[in-house]
Length: 266
Image (cartoon, rainbow, N blue to C red; front, side, top):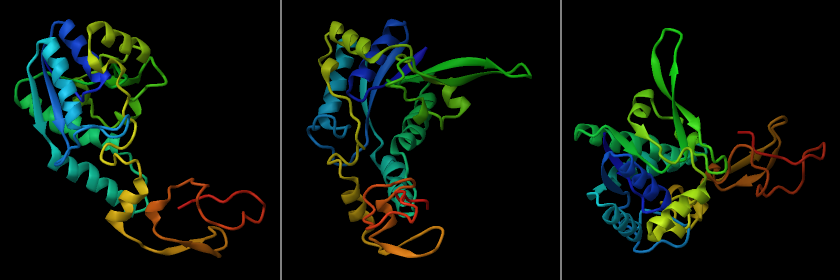
């Protein structure tokens, strides 16, 4: 098959690309430029898509002997991920930007372009598995399954993918444990073998989500009220600072009448 390997510059996508090559597929590496002004260096596990990450991905592609390209999806990322993130918080929701990025960028924009270019599938470093199921009418379809490594499973951020998108997806790491992936990268001589995983929101490298949202949304003061009585308990500076189920950081002076802690219900 002709395969696009999405290469973020991390260890997982590097090994996923290497496995696609080892499986005999015709592979090209693609790094997605998602920022109009990428940082030169990342700070530990904060952020991603830096120039350093692009360089790391290119070095792995060179070692694998596959073509490598950087595709600019910065404008679409801004519209479909960052603006959606801010608008959702402004509406009192708590969005998952990684889910939206997978849906709109990696498995919509990237896959669409790849198919237009004649490629059969996109391979990523996600920890998830694919399986074939037969429906009652005899129709066979591809379904998503959790990864073997429960601590690294990412199937939950891939649950928005359509059956058609899953048909054109490859997750080479789904049957592997993370320590084994790092060991494989080290054995291959990849310099990213010990690179920290990115676990913060990539477009907020400082890690201060509230400061980011405050700058975008501004102050929108309102009242905190008891859901059952309507009593005003205090004030807040904007619903974007809270999430459903939150108990800590509410700034309330007293618990509920029954002594139980208060939490956000809506």
